[in-house]
Length: 448
Image (tube, rainbow, N blue to C red; front, side, top):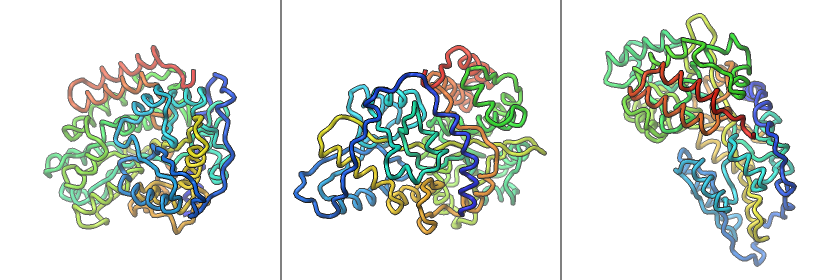
């Protein structure tokens, strides 16, 4: 396990190039950080009750929140932690709360201009002095550093996965998973013709996963030719031309024909349910939903042995695979000027969350690759299909996931176009041409 995690960290060193940009000067109070209080333990010491808001829970580990909340409040009986924002579109939730100048005490953060604005305006603390920062590899810290401010501690390493129900593939005549593009398309065709299941689906409602197959098509088309990191550089300066590689358009059109009807509007929970009732044979999803999807397929097939998790095989035959990866969504800490009791409570909770035995609740509920270097191996419980193939995930060259690169304008336009392709409302050529136009005309580098 240790060698595998080191390998993953080596792959993630490119993230140091992603999130350190930006020209605005950070206000002095953006890095202000109150002294961390002494831990009170079980003795409330006559403290008055205080309530703080936590916006860290995602639907894929909602059940485990009750365990975490209870454990914390048993230890710190004077602090009540309210879960807020779960199920809402994250960018919309934070936009609204930032506009009202009332962000939750603990927040999810990503590499988007909105969160850089929050740093510039002094709403998010610099976390570089906190205890957890000592146990985070530099690549992860650099990924969430903007204008010298470490504004988030990532939950781990995210990577793209193709999950397969091998019972359904077996009905279609496949005893092994496809290993390249031609095999993947043939597998989709066989599933469509020989079974009652759809070939594949994904959470089209979520931009990260809606974009995922397309960005892996891009990676396999341009990665080897351009070299490591060049695609990202061209994307970020608005010069990448999607139409310069015809196979990008051709593959998108060919793949879309096998997408399960409704894919464009599915949520991650929908995809879990679909894989759980055997309606689809394969799904594209992140490793962050591994636990739910593996469990769902196992329940419908009766065995974890029927579940495989592989690097999406969208490479040409005879060529090595490329994939997409990213630091996961991070947690940030409010810097809002608040009462002494609330400041103390929010910092106690933030530090508590990242203690290994507590963070393991989130880690194992989601099935993600851990980020804390002080987390012992006995606390790590990866789903078997992920653990069995982790070396391949680690050793595959990659591009960064889209949300590290795009602006809101491009994100909305490109993902709307992809949904139209999967729904059969637009042809791939029109959508891909539109992406190039949007990128060149309206792209503004994050932070400018």
